[in-house]
Image 1 (cartoon, rainbow, N blue to C red):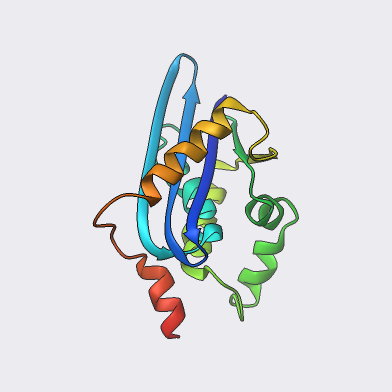
Image 2 (cartoon, rainbow, N blue to C red):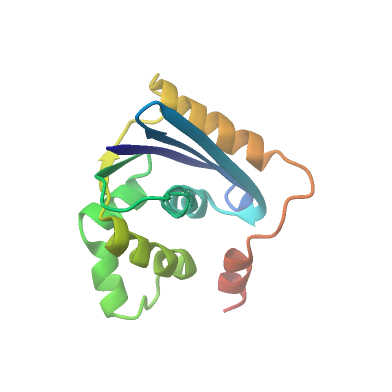
Length: 152
């Protein structure tokens, strides 16, 4: 089983943001993080999940994603994304990221587990630390999806 812990952060909403991911498989552990200027917390939460899945090198193993984002967990577990997709994502935010997520969901069929944020879960806390550190970086690239959404 592969476990993926994720978290997103933004300093201001919108503001500088980042995500943190920890991938666990057997005795292997990999950490990922990246920061962007002018983005939102929800975008970073979703991008963390996407980045974790995109980093996988194998298929066919059970995957559980641990996230403290009700936005992400509920959107998938309650099937909202399929309704949004059917309606062409009309009036929805983060469409670029949801369109990037859906093929990954189809490919990997991950299960989601909501975890309470800032509640002492060491892996969730580490993801938060990675996300916040990334958001505080220098010369952060733009979140082009967020910028395009604002212009539309």
